[in-house]
Length: 306
Image 1 (cartoon, rainbow, N blue to C red):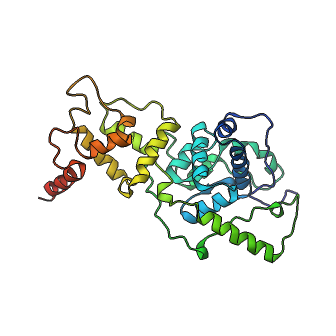
Image 2: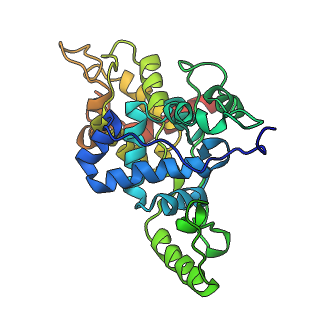
Image 3: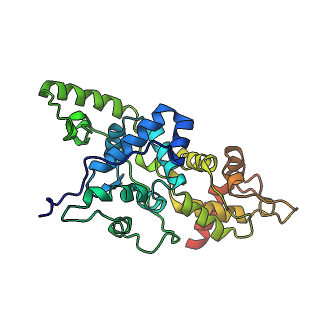
């Protein structure tokens, strides 16, 4: 008779030999990287169907508490794991979902005697309507900021008592103290979710679509991701793909930036560097500044309404 249907596991394989992802995390974060890597997969082990979506501040706080890591480092390490392929890029960038094909492959043995099979990565994609393939881009609206209150905040209770191998019962008083301590720590370091997920792929695709004459993005390493992520977070207006569409359209109107004046043109990385973006927004590279991007947008809106 098969085992009772379950969609979580009590253990996952951890191989002694370092893989590329763990090596990269440890190179930057040392033991902190090792801890986040193992705690993230412990978290996905006990999460139903081994994937987790960050939809709001509470979800981010729960993940941060579960992995015992500060928010900024956790989000940076997630992006690194996406870049190495350890976490699925499409699910993360388009739906804010943490899932790993390697991890799901590694836990198949735990489901061997169960009545239900382990979920597949394709089934997770279908759950979030990502059935059109990896190369199809779709913009996911940035998550709205949600006020943080202790009443609506879930907290991780990750302890040795969470696992059947080591049952350690805590008194209600101890659990209450731990929960209060977690509340203070997590509230102090979580950032709004709309500043967390920068849709790199969508912005790059929009750049290619509007400015095909300029150098194409072939590789987008972590250093470039950080630069774009910083521009995304600086202003709430930039957390909308409509703003980036207008930005690239405005660039297209500059003979200098497009290389029509001389044998030089900007590229995406150049135009998102802080000093260069400021000059572009101010109209410094346009023959007729007319107040920069905002004035141009106002004028275009006025013309459309006439």
